[in-house]
Image (cartoon, protein in one colour):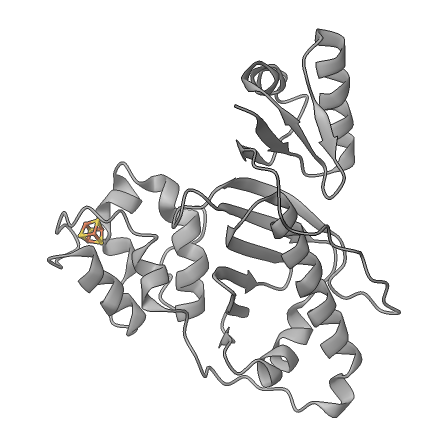
Length: 258
Ligand code: SF4
């Protein structure tokens, strides 16, 4: 099985390429991102080189049907470079990928202008965050990072990142003609909360099912930390994905990363 391994920057990619070439292992770069396609021995060699080589993550490799994005130029780029700091299978759908990218710019000032134009988006001024469905993908823009779930593959994820960069910069360039809005008009679908819960119906939160707990969160009537398996049990790996969707709902009552 081929694997795609993603790095935060081209420097880490080059270190991995050098390592694989010296070891006689396969490692084919892809053009859209600092990433390469390798196999299990190649991934093991890269992982064993940590902390000398930093990786953002990896998934099974599937050739992409998505055209590679073309990077646009802007007189003022408030979004900046997106460095992928986390990459892996999506918790809501393991056939898809999830990533977190850190931005070299600051998209925060542009979010109320985007919110004014994207009526289907969920703006949380306390974050601030702007969350919306990009087709079936769930995207959240923070001032200095982007979280993206259910992208098809690394090429599709990079296409969405470039699309978000264009939207942020284009709306920022037109901001003099837009009345910014801090109104929260929409929410991410409740199903997107449910898909990121353990779905074991253990009852530890006081609800009979994960679906009823998701409904409470969605209505703003619940504390995420009551899901014991995520905050004290075997499902801690779901915290990040839950944080992204619950930040948009304003029901994230636990500090991210805790
Ligand atoms: S504690 Fe978590 S896993 Fe258990 S029923 Fe509640 S939401 Fe589901």
